[in-house]
Amino acid sequence: MGIKVSAVGHALGERVLTNHELAQHIDTSHEWILERTGITQRYISDHKNTSDLGTQALKNACERYNLDPQSIDAIIVATMTPDHFTPSTASLIQAKMGLNPLKIMAFDVNVACSGFVVGLDLASALLESKRFKRIAIIGAEVFSKILDWNDRTTCILFGDGAGAMIIDYDESAPPCVCVNHSEGDLDGTLRACGVPLLQEDARPLILSMQGKDVYRFAVDVIPSVMQECAQKAKLTLESLDHVILHQANQRIMDYAMKRLNLDLSKSISNIAKVGNTSAASIPLAISMALLDGSLHHGESVMVVGFGGGLSYGAASFTL
Ligand code: ACO
Image (cartoon, rainbow, N blue to C red):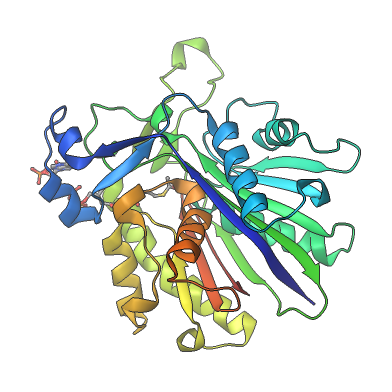
């Protein structure tokens, strides 16, 4: 049994913020950001929250593929920047799409930048259970609202956006093979503070990150989790048509591909245009690559997530 990808769509924050503009406000330069990360610009959402971008991405998927939104049985939203603790972003998207409450299950997963791969893992298992026929997995983030815009080590990296992928149960389709892992991070290597137990411990809701530690973690786990996933799927990494890594840093992506001796041209990248959009980055990259012709339906792909948690995972499937 397998999954069939029925529709893909995306949405971006409405304002482009270039490296040059950032350099007018903080001590950085276009050249530094480009050389260290591959990013030239990112999109910022000034007026739309995470559920708005998620709704826009899901609508875009339905419109592009002429698919009836009412046929969706479940919505899983991967995000670490929800509108609220509750209601979930998925429930808000359900309401904004006007989807039948009697038919639909909706919930969020918070696994930072690995969230989309975890969502895909969950959705595949739910489809396999045969209780659901069609599930929308949405990665959506408005990271700009949790950034310290004076911290040049973090604010240059992230952008706002959402990507949606709708998948169906299909007996005859190739399987979706997923692996996911978590290495509990008690040290706050990558953290956005929540609600403390004691009021005096309250800190702003901003992101803090030990960038070098995350970098080392990423280049270590990406090759191993890709090999693990390939082994489980009984395929070779060389046989894949494309690899879509979480778009955290172009250097991380290139390093991982080189370490696995994989053709760099197989790695899909949109980080130059959109920055790191956390849980949205994988479906956003897929959606944009399908539109510009660098990805096609029917191709075999592996997606790889890594980030806060610290978490990492991979999934191989046919697009
Ligand atoms: N502009 C100019 N200089 C800067 C900037 C900046 N924006 N940021 C840092 N620097 C300086 C530092 O202060 C340092 O100066 P010093 O040598 O005088 O101390 C120098 O540049 C080098 O800094 P490093 O931190 O060593 O730079 P590095 O090459 O490691 O790049 C970066 C930093 C881009 C953050 C990198 O470590 C990285 O990409 N890490 C991974 C981060 C990541 O992917 N996070 C997301 C995970 S996904 C999730 O779950 C949200």
